[in-house]
Amino acid sequence: MAKAVRVHQVGGPEALIYESIDLPPPGVGEVHIRQHAVGLNFIDVYYRTGLYKAPSLPFIAGNEAAGEVVAVGPGVTDFHPGDRVAYYANLGGYATERNISADKLVRLPDHITYEQGAVLMLKGLTVWYLLHKTFKVEPGHRVLIHAAAGGIGLIACQWAKALGAHVIGTVGSKAKADLALANGCDHVILYNEENFVERVKQISRNELCDVVYDGVGKTTFPGSLSCLRPRGLFVSFGNASGPVPPFALAELNNHGSLFATRPKLNDYVARRADLIEGADTLFAAVISGKLHLPINHAYALKDAAQAHIDLESRKTTGASILKP
Image 1 (cartoon, rainbow, N blue to C red):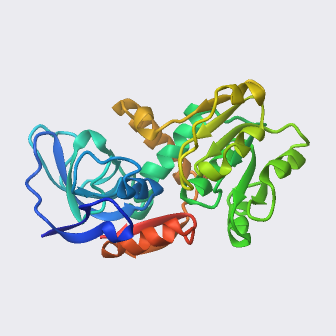
Image 2: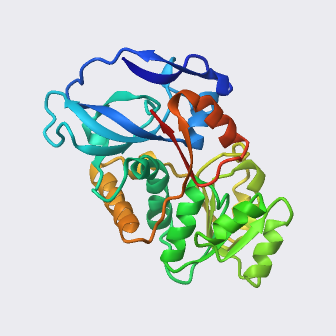
Image 3: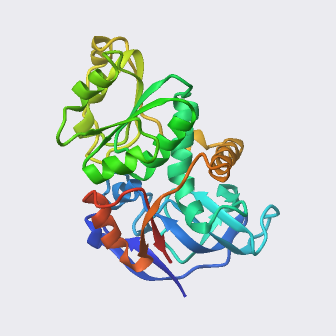
């Protein structure tokens, strides 16, 4: 019998219920996967609390995982039982087994583990589009990455550094600062002890940053705008501290004709060709040694509620996984 973590009513971590589910045979175009590792992400919290609305209740939480193909449904020719696969897809990830549309899957290369695959698809692909598509980071760019010791932050810092950028990160503790410095940051700002805007001005000698990657939201806005050079880009891709409040477009003018965007991964991998491009680029970066994936926390799937508690209280660093 398959097991899953479902949300019957949105709310706190206690809303995550570990229970048995009925899993039918895979339908047309679907693949049945036995999952080996599941990624833990802040977007899972957003769905659990209702900040992001699930299509219906109850729903199975989770948005990325890796596992082994058990069976394929009618019409599936690209995957076969025994294939190692990973995916990013909205909801359904917190499960021991699941059915999923074959067009959401990518094959895991031999040198990528299930655990790595489970944290690469959402976090890794997010960093891929942020640094290669939303703003193309090149040698000499100065970038500011908030929450630099988080699951996305550590990958972003490494990759931005590998692309030749000068990387500034913000973190909440000395231990996280050490972690960020070990993963590509040139400078780390302790936002609880320092004014990050003033420190960015000092570090950059008032030249400021070409781009700010902000997955924190409410508490880092509008300071992020003050860290950008004229015509710089503010990239708001998450709400860990709450959503960015509504603001007047004139604020972008006041800070030097800035650009601002609120991207999401779905729009960057909507076409299968884009998904494959992103995954191939990502896997190559890991296999070549440009990216190291610090998986610092592992929880049993049944302990998903505790994992959410730790994630929301900022106890976690790097990537975290659930083990079915």
